[in-house]
Length: 182
Image (cartoon, rainbow, N blue to C red):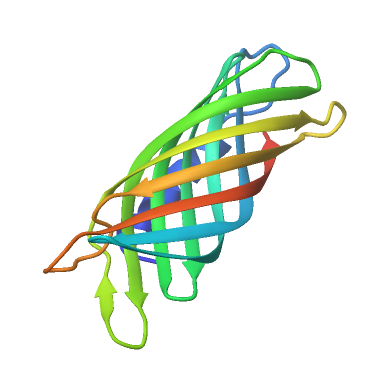
């Protein structure tokens, strides 16, 4: 992991840990881990290549009654690609007691990734990334844990540094997130 990524994660963790869980507060802070499985499609010029992919990551955020905001690190891996992302996500959720449906969007950047197959090898360039999420949160009433199950679509235009053409990435997956509420 690069120095700027390590510094960002340290600041986010220090900020999140500084708050205490308090029943009178209007918001909760949380941190957690995520894992997902799905597919990834690369589009270069007029050619598409699809394959299965998996992801994992960590996040930290704040939960306000109808909105959730979080910073997220994700690693996506497939047969020919490894891609790291730093994202900021916003979720709008329904105020239902135990199972809460939500919809979300995120924006961020790629860094420290590689595309390689038998013929070529490309490094990522710092590209902007967009994602959309739709899911359900299971709020466990007695424990300080929440479980999110979501579908996610990520789009990264010009993800890799290819001099002759553009290589776009479309990643779609089902994801499970475990959140610890401070």
